[in-house]
Amino acid sequence: MTPPNRRMPRCAGVGLRLAHLAEVAASRPAAPWLETHPENFLANPHATELLIDIARDIPISVHTVGVSVGSANGIDRTHLDRVRTLIERIDPILVSGHLAWSTHAGEYLNDLLPLPYDDETLTLVARHIEQVQDSIGRRYLIENPSSYLGFAGSTMTEPQFLAELTDRTGCGLLCDVSNIHLSGHNMGFDPYRYVEALPANAIGEFHLGGFTVEADESTLGSELLIDTHSEQIAAPAWKLYHHAVRQLGPKPTIIEWDSELPPFATLLAEAATADTVADGALARETQHAVA
Image 1 (cartoon, rainbow, N blue to C red):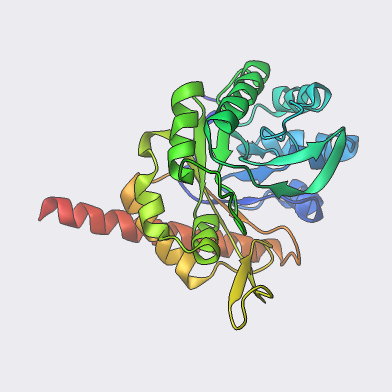
Image 2: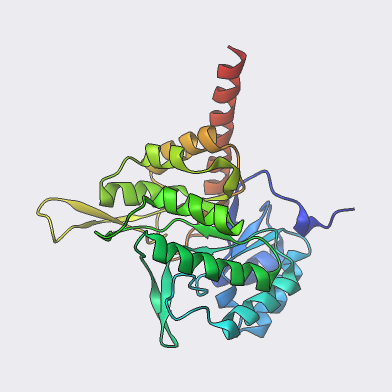
């Protein structure tokens, strides 16, 4: 029999944060799967034991925030080794991280910082992804960032860059639908065309999260969307998710909520909404195919 933590989920799950860890360990809520940041557990043995216990019953995925595949100084091998050890203990169904850099000269920054999309960056990031995959012994999914600025010297679009990464390394993609909506608003591109430019066969997971709206001080009267993961998912992101499911197919989906955490039941309700939206997208696609 296949262990529970090796089954790829068909329904949407939620991000498991430390504030809900004890509750989930005690009550085993009806969550089809959960996603964790390993960095929250590396120096917390008690939390790690609770997570390992939960993983016996509920599939877990690991979403790294400190691997920093875009750092010019290279991967922190000590950190990567610690992440690998946790992965070996919980045997997650998916492992993912960000297309960004967040370390410099041994210092960890509390931000996921952007990269120029050119051949030099592509070579650097591809080399680092290969190192990560060699270390963890499995495919690594790379998430598209939330963007607030771009580089004038970029020679590729973000979807082109991501597609090239998958070709060079065999990595997968984590399509953060909310990030695409947010970045499209902030950077002035069409989020629907962005989705359509992604390689569908490389997508291993979807993310959905809430954002906040702030005034853009650089342009009078305009607004920026900020990826805070502190709100319910907005209607335009749900609409784009519907399109993404139709375009890219159904994928394991996670609801992200990182700050101003609501009750765990609220997260499960958001996951149920994701299932409803995905089912509607697939039903419409089937209807078109029959017609």
